[in-house]
Amino acid sequence: MAFDLPPLPYEMNALAPYISERTMEFHYGKHHKAYVDNLNKLIKDTEFENMPLEKIIQSTYKRPEFTGIFNNAAQAWNHTFFWNSMTQNGGGKPEGEMLKKIEKDFGSYENFRSEFKTAATTQFGSGWAWLVEKDGKLAIMKTSNADTPIAQGLKPIVTVDVWEHAYYLDYQNRRPDFVDAFLDHLVKWK
Ligand code: MN
Image (cartoon, rainbow, N blue to C red; front, top):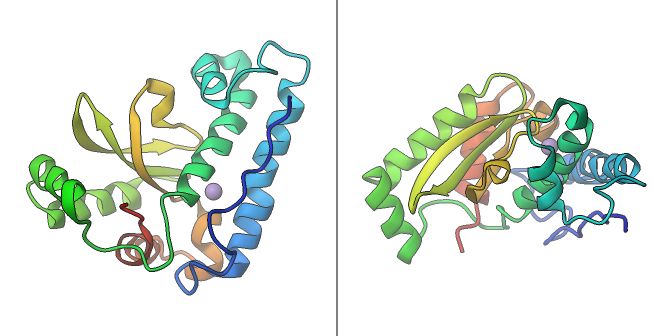
């Protein structure tokens, strides 16, 4: 059983101008696709061939002999989660239960926003920033390279990809501007 590249939940140009169609063509069409294709090659005829993606990630985590499988499986999962963390006309302050939970666990939406932005902009090199649920509370974390909260059994709520390939065509080296666009115009709270 081989994994397919999951379809995007919107058109390639839906997130423009914050994420351009050209970035989506490379990021989804080339980078994400390559992780899925590499994963399929690496798991063929192995014990992982028929496992669900989440189980492959958890089974190969921190096992040096399976680093290649972990990296490609985790990146395949992280990207699908990232596409689903965004929507056209998203961003800004959430409503209802989500806002209540953020205010309870971070004090205010403004504090949450500031902590999330700090995590996303201070992740050194490639990686991801996440809002997760941990022991029933919301928490912010950052991960390096392909690392993902689901490897540790945490529940991700939203993520932003801060690898340079996520923003370089649109923002060059201005990662903070990309993170602002994600928080203010793209993040999908529903
Ligand atoms: Mn990426």
